[in-house]
Image 1: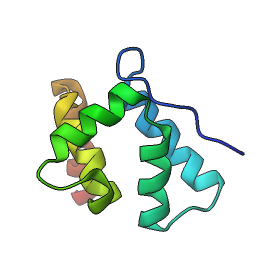
Image 2: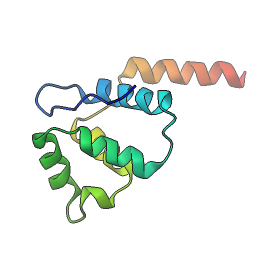
Image 3: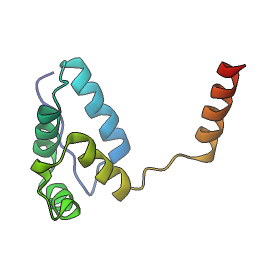
Image 4: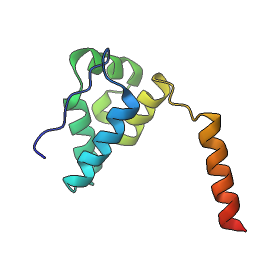
Length: 98
């Protein structure tokens, strides 16, 4: 894969985009955190970059790790686990321990 699609703050779903971005890294064997951060920041449209910039203050987005940046967007877009998913994870863990 040559290029990752861009993330548009107004029209893109962050959860879906993040999953696709992780797959992009996997397919292209990208494990370096600096490269991941650069690819993410480069894929943001202007509005999304302004958003991550403001949410990252007082540091620049380029000074944060890839994980820190994705956590910022996770919090901003309120990625929360539904009770159904939490319940399924609980019962899966319970079955493993039995």
